[in-house]
Length: 128
Image 1 (cartoon, helix red, strand yellow):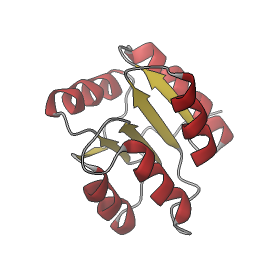
Image 2: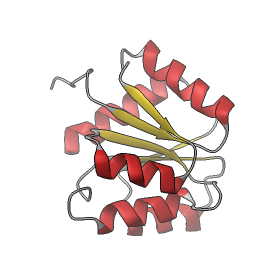
Image 3: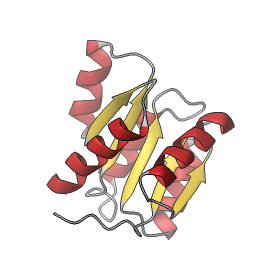
Image 4: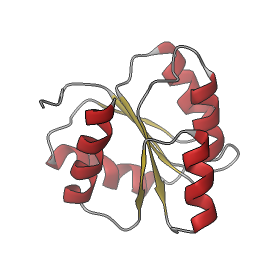
């Protein structure tokens, strides 16, 4: 299975440092077409006007959480099939269940490295 390394990936986090970390990890595994959004509503606007092969979003954001963003994406006919990876600081069972019910493709618990990110992306895109 070959993965399109040129696809556009949208990373969403309200914490600039985290965006930089994720961007660097993606670069290490050869994904260079990365766009950033600093909250859910900005992410939605970008998703609705662009073409993205993958969304990687933090869970904990204000004013729109990663879960709310995921729900919006899944409710949008044009976006609903977009692979969506959620990043969370805690692996609370109820969070995992909520994300699964909302249609998350996969999730990553912080802290994580490039290898973990690569594995999750490959798994998600294999099923897309």
